[in-house]
Amino acid sequence: MIRRSLRVCKKRTTEKNPETNHKKDALPLDLLLEILIRLPATSVTSFMLVSKAWANTIRSKDFLRSFPYPSSPCRLLIALQGRDRNTGRQSCCFFSSSSSLSSSTTSFLSRITNPSSSNRPGWLTAYYVNGLMSIGQVICNPITGKSITLPKLLKTACNPRLAMRFFGYDPANNQYKVLSLSPTPNSTPARVKAQVFTLGGAKPKPNSWRLIDCPIPHALRSRGLCIDGSVYYIAGGTGLMQMSLMRFDLNSEKFDIFASVSEAVRALRPRRPLNLINYHGKVAIAIQPIRTASRIDVRVFQAGKQDELEVSFHDLPQLHMHIKGVVSHTGEVVFASYGSPEAHVFHYDPNNSANKLTRINIQVDANRNMFSEANYFLGFQESYVVVS
Image 1 (cartoon, rainbow, N blue to C red):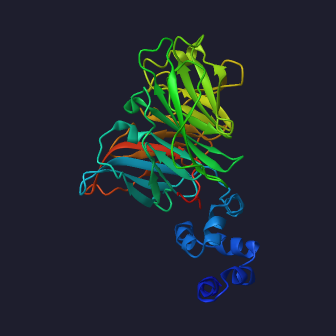
Image 2: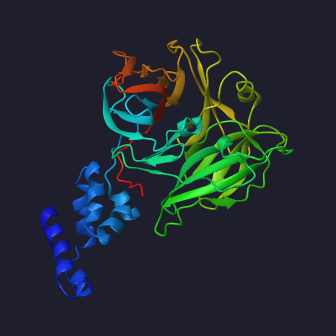
Image 3: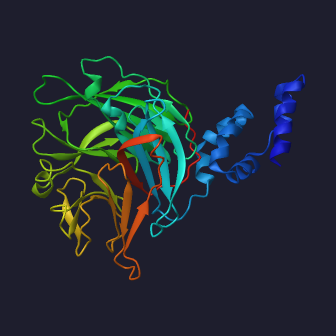
């Protein structure tokens, strides 16, 4: 069927009336979708070269929604960043866990290389949202290894080296957006310059950054988290009454203060970074009093309120590791190493009497790569999303 389709598409270019032939030979949309969703994700991008109609179909929202995503939300994506020994450039290798976190095996997905040889640390800021990765100035699909490099930020009064980037997906318009916030020097209260870069959608916008208004003075205090079309991050500064959870709506491109931050969370910042997690569709933060503690408190943010204690888990293993996520209400927790070159992850399931603690190992080529940063993302799913 696929070969026949290719012959049909090629035939159009040889006849005198391409417009008439297009109407005569074009495959019905439902049949084309049926052909494409039967292909592996790694093969789909090559079929964009068949015709403009095929390329538009693969980019469309209908096609992405037709893709049969796995029902399990618990796969893990591992992104190991470092330097390629052969080229000297920064690179990133992607691995995924099997369909179950109770398995100790991982699979290699792809590798990307930063086109710049720059040592700027901003390239290491990594996010995973709805099938795509944002790693500083690079956006890629970890399944296919296809990537694009974002253009330089617009010239403003801000230092681009101090810019902090966030990544999110707007389901209403089927668009991915990168939000860049740069602190304005010598401003009291602290202010930021905001720029947005848009990818995808039915009507893609020009491939350039756009300045947008950010009327709320604040300073950045955490990395971001995207949930249901909004990017959340913790902010402080004299422009706010107190430390708060900020929200950036990806559709309207408006900022607002979503919730206030409790003293229990504020007390953490001098000692460790504040890492937001998605706890069953809610913005949350997991607090471990000290790394050797056997208890985790999960505090959830509600609109217009202060974060509140949702649940506590006790008798956890003392692993001296970072809490990457809480998988279930029963206390399934994923622990990750702190950027260790020997990257590994532990999945703790208190309900599994036979094997409560599973170590997930990542096989890497130490002869080629020198890894210095490890990032872990729950809810990984194979995606057809095309980076362009």
